Image 1 (spheres, rainbow, N blue to C red):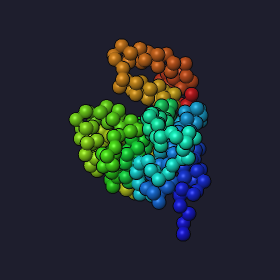
Image 2: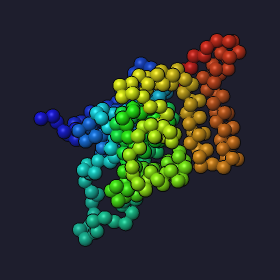
Image 3: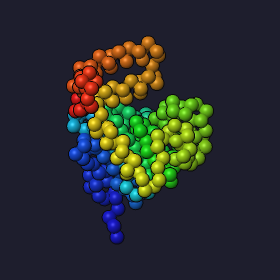
Image 4: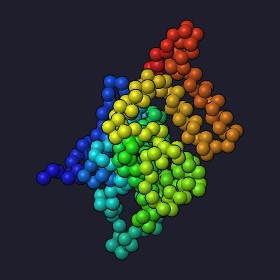
Length: 279
C-alpha cells in the first residue's frame, strides 16, 4: 500500500523548488486527501512565502498542487497536541479558538497577501474553504475549466475564516459575497472568471503552459516595482483617497532608488529594451 501523505516528511507534503528564472513553486502534495492542508503544511507554506519575500533572487511565486484538487480546506483530522493545562481547566478556554484562527488560517492568507513577490495560483480542481481563500489572496489566478471554487463553511455550520468575509466583498461586492457565503454552492471556473475571481480559464491540459507564460514575464519584470504596486493596490482597498495618494507618492519615491527604475528610464532614453535585475 502507498504511504499515507500524512506520514511523509513535511518537505514532501509541501514541495518547493526554485528554477533558473527565479520562479519559486510551492506545491501542495497530499492528493490522497484532496490536499486538505494540515497545520504543519500551513506553517511550511507561510515560511516559504516569507523566504520568497526576502530573497532578491526570487522574481515570482507559483502556488500549485498535485492530484485533482487544489486544496479542499483545512485537514480537520490533523491536529497538534494540546497545550498543557491544569487538570480542572475546561477543554476549551475562552479565546482559544480565536487564537487558533489568527495563528492559522488568517496567517496563511496574510502571508500570500503580504508576500513581496507576485504570487500566481495554479488551480486545477477543487479549491474549497481556506483553499479557495488562498487562491483568491493570490495576485493572479489561472484555473482549468474543470475547477470549482466553494465557500464550504456554511455546509459545515461554520462561519468563514481565513479572510473570506474580507476578500470576497472587495472582489465581487457585498450582495454576491453574501450569496456565495450563505449558500456554499459550487462556483465553476467560468463563473469565477465572470465575477473577477479568476484571471484566466484554460483547458485542463493547458494549465502549466498558461502559468509558464506569465512566469516568464514576471521573471524579467522590475520585481521591486511590482512589490510596491501590489502594496498600493492591496492597501487602497482600506484607504481613503488622501492616504492612497500619500502611499502612491511614497512608493514612487522608494521605487526611484531601485536599479530597475533607473534602468527603465535609461532604456527609454536610449531607445533600447530594458534589462531588469529584480532590485
